[in-house]
Image 1 (cartoon, rainbow, N blue to C red):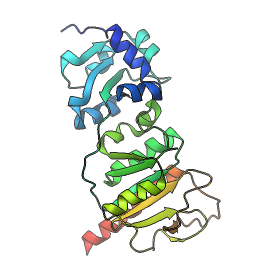
Image 2: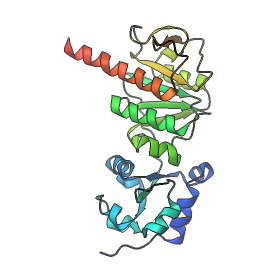
Image 3: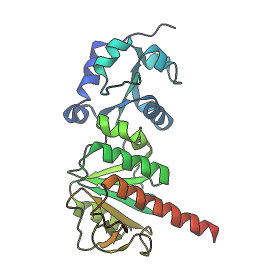
Image 4: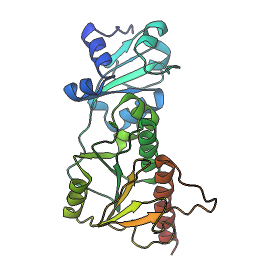
Length: 255
């Protein structure tokens, strides 16, 4: 079966989604790379408007042929957002988070400005089985090209909820009975490996560097650093905290 190239309208949409304004206007995003596209298709195949790719890359996915568009490699490189393209981009409607908040705790990002960090944190949340990932204004757009690529599409398996302020985020969480708050502080607080109640109907907050997040009503926790280093970056800290949750859940199952 011979596949058509993208239409002029589809090409214009593809290019517009490289900007935050374009994503807001269309409520869509680009998802580039085989692994990211597969993640998207596993959760929201109906949200995918179309996939553009080389013949070789399109042959690697199982999807409705009517929504596949083919381009030769040299033309695909012109629309790709990467230096070394994997040959496929899916255009999809940004999914709305489910109405019901679920899980043992909420992981929250306050002012995480680097899309690579956001994507890495999204992957760690997926790997740790944590579904709720909330963020404040000042945090990077989770649906930007680089954030989705860095997350390898993990965003599509999470309940992403954005808030105008940290106060609003916490009041929303408290109303849903997630009413214990913890924030990661590189210099103060109890060790995340011993502090009780961190993951029990709570909100765990990671802030952007270098200021971090300081919430008066929250308990500070830290990641012990015997090497006496000033701090690790937000994505590294998030991964430690998320897998401390996994460790505690594993211990509970063993008892």
